[in-house]
Amino acid sequence: MDREGEEPGSRASISWSTTSKPDVFDITDYGVKRSEEGFTSIDEEKNAFTVANIKAIQDAIDAF
Image 1 (cartoon, rainbow, N blue to C red):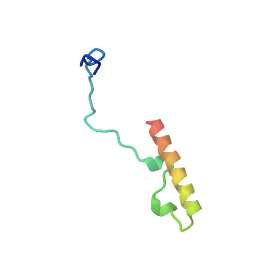
Image 2: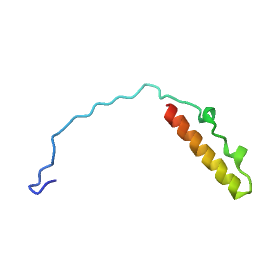
Image 3: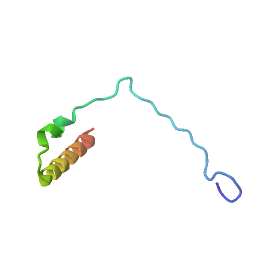
Image 4: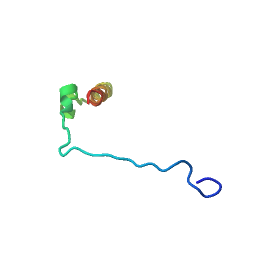
């Protein structure tokens, strides 16, 4: 609201739609590994596993 109590700018309408069935894809196709495949008792290995999965998930998002 501005000093006079008015909303700044002009009104606009937004149109959107969704698909009847969402797109589904398997992030393991992009290199993501399940936690049971990657966790060990060494923290450095857990961190490397997590970083690798984050990068793979981002690759999947970028490909979509």
